[in-house]
Length: 276
Image (cartoon, helix red, strand yellow):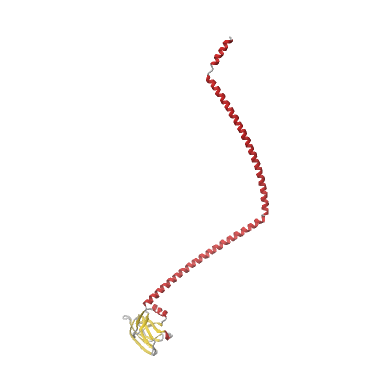
């Protein structure tokens, strides 16, 4: 009987599938592996906790040291501030003085700039006036040069070579500037009376504008000299009685019953135009 039960038991055991056995084996391996991994992680976590604790302690000690140093520095700064109290006041005064000086310097620079600008404006204005004057001088010089070129020397009515003859007031002024003779300008109307010109008297008898001719009577040291049918710009020549000095009368302007021109005399006579 017992023998038969053993046989049945072996038959039942041999009837368990092999895959179940394999699963059981794998499951056991996984559990073993997980247990090992959990153990290793617990060890590492314990080591990390120990390291963190050590670092925290180090930081706490460092913080304590820093607080001590800050306290010392505050004490040193307070002591230094007390010692430098007077110096800071002086420094504040010095800064105030520096700001005032800087402001004054800026104001002075602005005033100087304004003065320079005004002076430059005046200089520009003066330069403009100088340029204008230079232009006027150049124009006057050109006119004088042209006048000098136009002055002519001719032979008078006595056949004597005359000096330069002026054909208008401007050319007469040029002759005066030369200073070679004395010149007395006149503007005379036709009249029965004599008019004083230099050291002589002149009376206009006739004026022919169409023909540019005129007739005058000269009174020279009580001597009467008549000059008939004389032409415009012709030097009318005559001598002072009992002298070698030649005088010339030139008419350069002619109107109806009126003539204008000048009397030329040697400087040696020092002639003057009487008044009245």
